Image 1 (cartoon, rainbow, N blue to C red):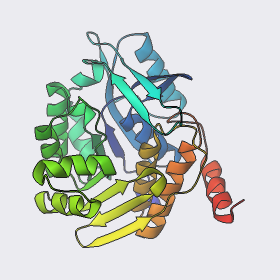
Image 2: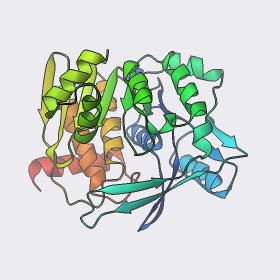
Image 3: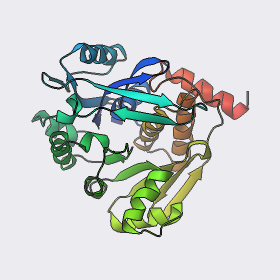
Image 4: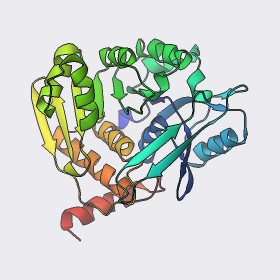
Length: 305
């Protein structure tokens, strides 16, 4: 990591919420998860979201302060409640389904004048699909994209909270796109209905949009990084799954930590895949850990200890 880059912010935009799991209530939301793991890896992450002026909102703000994330860009909403999601994990702990209430506070994230300077000074801007489901946050997101330097689209489709027209616009404004295999084929078939294979789907998206990079995550099969002229595949680290909540978000944070430090793609993917496995082996999206804990996990895996 280039130390001069550490203080330049990575801005994460979108939903923060309470995940109501069988094991209890935990803080969640992909942008918050990414911001958390970036922070744990020593980067300056800034989270832009909105919570209700209610007890769950106060508790979320307290959690953010507890884990070291700044709360100055978290807006308070007097009319709409803090988001709560009912998450259900299947018996094998490898699939999660979500019941996401609409509307909630983060559907109404408003543009603030200070966002422009923050984005222009940032290393990267991370956003997803869910926060674009309502017109207020969507218009704020579109405006932010026009000021960002390196736009990272973490697709994260949650039916029925997405529309093809919106995803089309977000893909048109992305530099790096991260999505899983199912999301890739679903989107690619909008433009090429006969698409059946990953390579075909990747080609469809590169031909249609001006993105420079794409990451396909494949769970226990690892991940593949693509550019229009390059492909690099990396296997997963085998672990005993506690749950998969937030594993993709931690993967993206680790990938960005290495990518923005100009590390080579093989080391970058190794680090990202290891982080996804590390978080999968623990309950919840934001378990407490240090960089030493994560490095020790990697050492043990490489030594088969």
